[in-house]
Image (cartoon, rainbow, N blue to C red):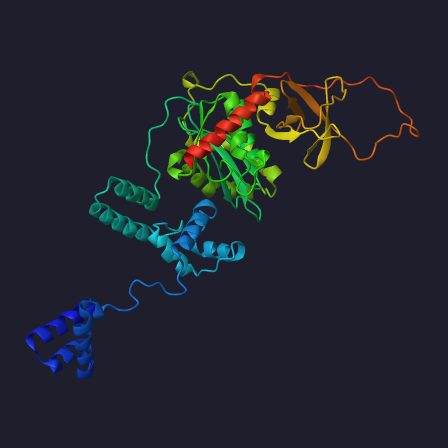
Length: 455
């Protein structure tokens, strides 16, 4: 505005051959400076009045790429931190040094508010977004701004409950200071139709084991549900960043277990995708820590035992009654089958010693009679680590148990007394279709094809 004002004064002064002293008073400068402005106008025109730094970023300003990096760190890793804590984590863990105000300015432009922001701040930003939405004509831009308005309101959109018990189970994990002096991850599952908490489990982090555990609780107590809705932000990412190991590809492991059970799996990184579990965590954060503190619970083992009783208390207070006539849960599988389905599958290659290496230990393949079975060097197999930590391996359409090969013999045949005992028959589950090597490899190919389509 100042540049425009100067330009109009000097332009009128030259066109009307006006009084330089009057112009100097209006611009609060000297007559000598007015002469400079007149000379500049005659030489460059209106461009002379544009400040030289306009459009130039300061030397210490962050680039758009750096701002995007900070935004992604917050959304994917530190989404539940306020600005102060986030700036501390950036310095301590990411080696990025920003003040709280710098973080606030970056997120204000991205329409990302702190979890602790005041209601007035949210309302002000919401009004600003609504005004911008009215100015744009593009449908895509309007939808993008609408998504930001919903995020700013911090309200999960109302949606009708599912019709049937077991039709949709929302699962997620929440890292919070639930008990003791360190944060833990509470894995939870809730039924959308009734709001009943079906399973809870504590672990140190959000892990595949935690989700397998709540899945087992659901399968044991209720049966097989129709659909799981969950988060793909962390444990359900397609590939763990920086790792190509199949056993760390948690999405494939969990999705393969769901495919064996016939459970539909839907994932999204948007919190509004699963509002029922998000609201449940808000309630749990306000009530469960106090319950655990008053019960003098300080360890994960004690906390997990306590959760079995707390689920009933929570459901009596907040959930709807279960109508078993409107249940779509399928028949409950037995525990042995559940342990085999909730497994981690890994590809291995048999070495020249007719053994495989798994978790830094060597194993050989044995049949039901505890007789070692030898395969040629280079033969591929799939190692199956069941939920109860039993190890098996499949080669083509055959399944074997894995026996650890010790570095040193436990008993010497030459010097120790050996008591002859009847060889104990080893339990080996029957080979069913989902464990066939070709079936698992085909599933992996579908997952990789899905990733290509998404990217």
